[in-house]
Length: 599
Image 1 (cartoon, rainbow, N blue to C red):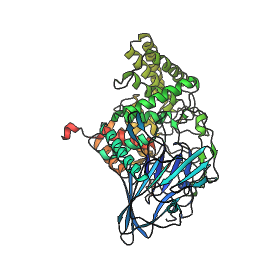
Image 2: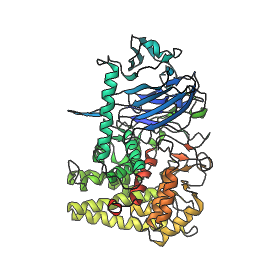
Image 3: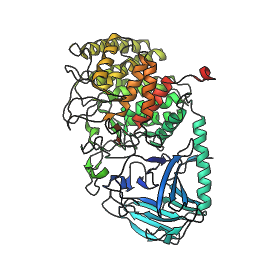
Image 4: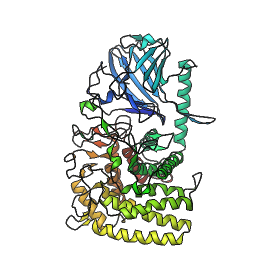
């Protein structure tokens, strides 16, 4: 194993219960148990260097290793890593989290499976499994058996089962791989079936599940591979038990090197989730979409409509108190490592519109098992009242500024969008009196936001009332329906953003100083907003070219984090970022040629 610093050339496996991030050398460097927001028992990603002595890693080292390669099994969440030594010997590591259909539903246990197979020669490996506890502050208690090791840390209990004797799991024990070796990380219960036979059966069932799931999607003709990988990744960032959508699987990967812009993203942001649901709907992933809408319904039902939070825990918990964990040095030593997210206390009024825009699907989509009616509309109206009452009030905005509040244009537009969609739903349900109320309110709100968000000085829509700062969220105005893409004001805004926020094919959220200074890195989702805006104004060739360049910036297995350094091209921010993967889907669907056109 090398002592190189960590990077985001990572692959993700998972089953909507647990997930793991694997580097290009086949080391699992991030895995939370017993679920996606749990204690990162494998946390080497948040250390200064990935050396031979680092804790929180599940590595399979090849003696005299010379080369490595990694890829996904086509149309699956199964990762294969190939390692070759200087003598031509090689191994294949197959990693996956079991997920498959049974007679009673979908089976997705708290398990990670690693299968190590010889390819050529007489490869010699050593296995290193060094889990931590309490966010790197301790080590779990261990109990060794003949073919397994049990681990215990407080209420968390798990087991590593091997098809080889446990002596092979000692870091200093070299093992010649002349037959397949299986390692199963899972609950602390006996594996009743032979581990190799179980792993092979699970592997085939998991392969069938993902390939069948992909066959059910409405994939655009162009950029199929990129869209499929994005769709699978979005699915892996959902928590099956509740339907919650996580913003990312990690915490505290800095947005910018050494900036302390380190946040915990293992929660469900209602704003982000709206964009995820919108993207999955375009692909026809109705089960995932419907599960999130159930989560949304439950969350709103438990909450006070007048105090809806911008984010919740993946089981719906509301208190997400933020703390730092000093035992972890942070990604490349760039702490702090934060657990929890104080943004749950912020006022972000766009959340009301986000919920209404996501929930409207319940009233119109005939594919759903149950179509919403007047009773659900009555509950949604409570959020509409809050959107109307919150319109043009100062808040933290979509970028969650911690040191100030302003009347943010995006928040106002989302409040208007929520009210306007309520009018549409009321008309659809035949509620003429409610349609009249919401329609009149929407008309008034639209006129006000168009007037107050327009800066004569900048000749553009700006990020906040009575300000002159440009903001990339203005690129969404046609998609949200506030203005047509052909409106001269939007075209002028697009040109202003191109002059100030666009950096090649990358786009910054804003340029002004915030709580941590002036941001240096671009925000990946904004780049896709720019692509879509180019297409909306008729600059299709430019949009396609820009989109193609963006896809080339993905990591080696096709994934995006949150941010990109415009100078080095390196990815930063939490990983994988659902916002960014959504951008792949939305832009590909918009720009792709039709199947009929080609075939």
